[in-house]
Amino acid sequence: MKYVLGLLLLMNVVMAQEKIAIFAGGCFWCMEAAFQPLKGVQEVDSGYMGGNSSVANYEEVSAGNSGHYEVVQIHYDSDIITYQQLLDVFWKNINPTDERGQFADRGKQYETVIFYTSPKQNMLAEASKVALEKSGKFKKR
Image (cartoon, rainbow, N blue to C red; front, side, top):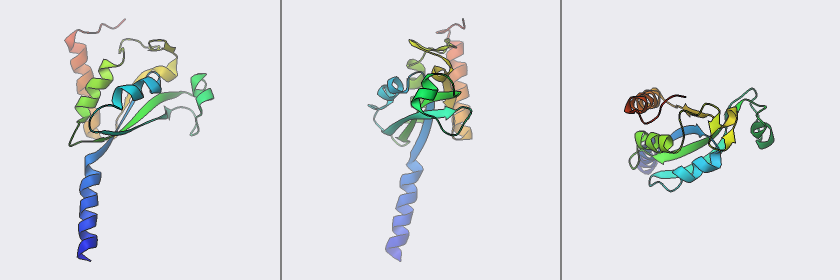
């Protein structure tokens, strides 16, 4: 019994360190490449969020018919890399002033969105957006 309890406690510690961040920033393959090499990022999955239906496939989404965004779901160890650091990478890999997509990828499915998984992520995402706007690096078109 003592070993089972110890294993459960260890699993809770490990699970508490693994977090998820979800970003839409144009083509999900481009976004994968930005996050995969980062120390502390355990896995990056591509997929779709938002939209008009619970089922999305590449043809529907890339044609712009489903209302979904192309996203990456990042599993990361919060003891190694913080959500703030992931936000910094996100902002460096998109053009926040482009409301019609990203770079060569045009359409709603390629627009930028930060999907938060907790109130703290929401607060950090909003603060990072405000800080970027105040920095003067990007001017709204």
